[in-house]
Length: 444
Ligand SMILES: [Zn+2]
Ligand SMILES: [Zn+2]
Image 1 (cartoon, protein in one colour):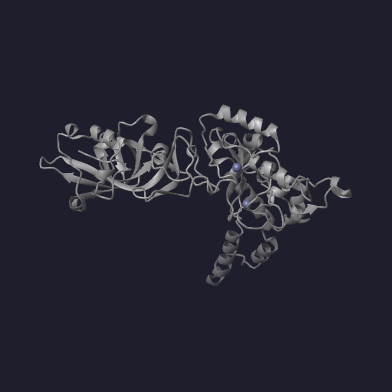
Image 2 (cartoon, protein in one colour; image 1 turned 180 degrees about the vertical axis):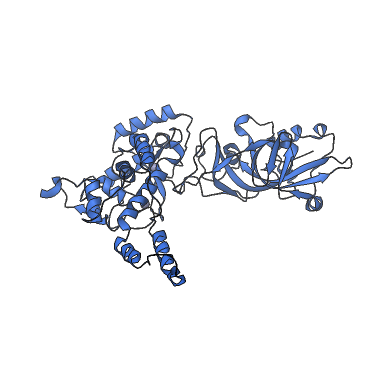
């Protein structure tokens, strides 16, 4: 049997023989005719169309299904293992009645495969070692070439709930379009990363070196912007506003602030309150916290007047007759910077973004609930549920509770545990989102 490599194969049944590479040759010798006494030749399009389709099919010890990712046997080195996504599985009946499975697959390209395409402007250090790029190169391969199912995580960096994976996992975040003719990456690596365009590597190979370089960079101050190597070990801060949803290097923003705003600015509220005011579901500060994000006159008489604590601010926002009723740990997490950092186990890919976003939503829910309206609705409820005409009132109460998000309650034990785990990442410097520069700075 003969199968072709992603880079060199064309659409179904039309191999581009003229574009053979070293890699194709390696594969052909592995799957060459001598290794295929059955003559399980690659089906032509007409045969493929008539073959029997399956949702799942067993091959050697594994079961494969439509949509799963698989590693494919090749003579390539283990770090360049071939991975593909299964689009469909079909079976060919041989004259001897032995069923032979074939799959239509979409190839993931390894960093080395992508670099071999010589895409203009692509730096040679923009991929993580276990990263793959989902191409639009589609191919037919026999199920006998499958080694095992694997998982390739979709890493959506803009998402507030990014996938959690470890350094042994494969992941992909970019697509390779028109892989066989004029390949293009979408998005281009680093296109939406920070102000420097350096892509995030969750598991850098040379973390000790990067950490030492970053330390040296911080000593340097002023002068030149941090280099890509230095940034590998850096903390990244996330702006959760839905239209922004971007990660920024701490050192890039500190450097920028030093260059552009050498004067320190004072604000009405503490850094914690100003971070808490940044709403993950809106393009403006939370209305009850916005006034704490205003700037104070620089170094004025009142500059040193003590800032109210986060709890005092929330109590004032709630009004005199209401209890906050939220665990201290949850409030602390809601006011944390949203950060991630490479080489920190599960913290590295996702950071604390999910916890902080959920905590902020729970705090807002307490601030926003229209209690007076709820009480009025409850007073309008009949004493007992019997008259059919009352159904509408119950329905209104139910709908109201739903819109207020009052059906969720924070569980203190979870937040108490998390605040301890995340405490190490809480003390980060004051930064403002460069992408949301407007009337009021967005503290991140
Ligand atoms: Zn940066
Ligand atoms: Zn922003």
